[in-house]
Length: 98
Image (cartoon, rainbow, N blue to C red; front, side, top):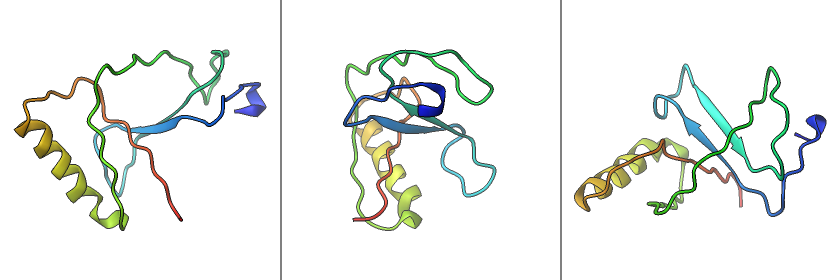
């Protein structure tokens, strides 16, 4: 990002959107990162405005990544059981390590 002259405000906000859902192969991930100002699109980076979410269902998962599909299934079941509708692709933020 700095190579393109982008300023990313602290503490930083980034996430991924996994097009087609979580898969172990043929992965299609869109990486999104907050910037102070939109820059000029390039071959590898496109700038766009993402609508603010008025409400969000959030789930914090502790444990191994091999349970991720099960965790996602749990939150999807909760969404359905509580009468919510997903209106935008889910945002994933991964923390690996301590």
